[in-house]
Length: 144
Image (cartoon, rainbow, N blue to C red; front, side, top):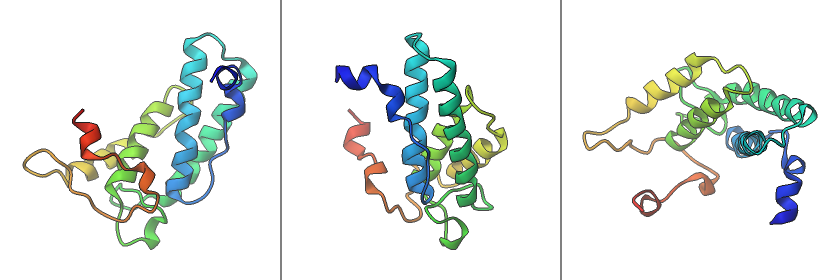
């Protein structure tokens, strides 16, 4: 673990692929930046590289956005957006805001779409297909 912690910048990756793959590569860049910044190890070189990756991943993810504000693996070629991916995009875009420009409308539209699928018990109905099931969190993991 020590070697990885000393070379976190080597874990930075350019996001690519479908909407799910893109976000799986996008989000760790935020966590790495946050860690390096909080431990005062963030250099201008690393920040420039990481923010370039974030900006590219952000722009790429917008290709997978539906008109209703949701996101899916293949964008408008999918029948509908996916609740899991849309919530992950919303959270990740919010996390990227300290480092890159994120249009607040994209976050607000995702939030509104998720709210439109909220049930009376507060849960959000699962909608759409998710191909990378590792993105899902089990209910037992949420309840502790």
